[in-house]
Structure formats: C-alpha cells, structure tokens
Length: 128
Image (tube, rainbow, N blue to C red):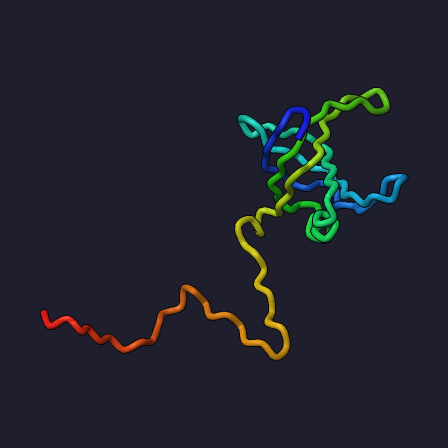
C-alpha cells in the first residue's frame, strides 16, 4: 500500500454506490463520518476497489458502522479540501470476525460443529 496508511471506525452517511472507471473496473464509493479523538467527527470519502467490496455494497447503507483500513489522501474539489481513503479493508461492524455459514451442497452432509459436546461413553483403561 502506498501513501499514509490509516485505520478507523466510521458511520456511513451516504449509501454505497457501485461505479466503474472508464476502463470498466468496478469500485464502491461511499461517504462516512470517522470518529476521531475526543468524539470529534471527520467526514471522509471511501473508495474500495476490490470485487468483494461490490458484493458488500448492499450492506453499506446510511447509519451502518464500519471499520476501514486503507491509504489516506487529502483531495481538493470545487474549492474545498476533504479526506479520501482508498480502502484495502471495509467491514460492517456487525460482521467483523463472523463469517456467514455456508449451506451444505445437495447430497452432502454438513460438517460437525467443533464446539458441540461429544457423546462418547467414558471408559478409562487405567486401573487407578
């Protein structure tokens, strides 16, 4: 990653949109409010370039809290200055650390839950 690396929690303020570059490369764009020191807020524009972010875009609605990592840039537009992040990671807060379970394919058995108790009778071969 080039540039100034950053990581922050934010709240989406403008729903994510899937767009394309002139070359046809898809990306996701959304606006957010980053929560920074002393509960101050900082508006930031987030651009996410991977195809997986396009799949995630329906979950990035206004009000959703997200965790973002990426490369920070200061941009000028229409006489104003704003922060922009080229994201390498975007995770809605409710999905961090959790993966959606996959349904078993037809004709195949689901794997056993590794945290489920094992129902095996206890037999200790040691005499003491």
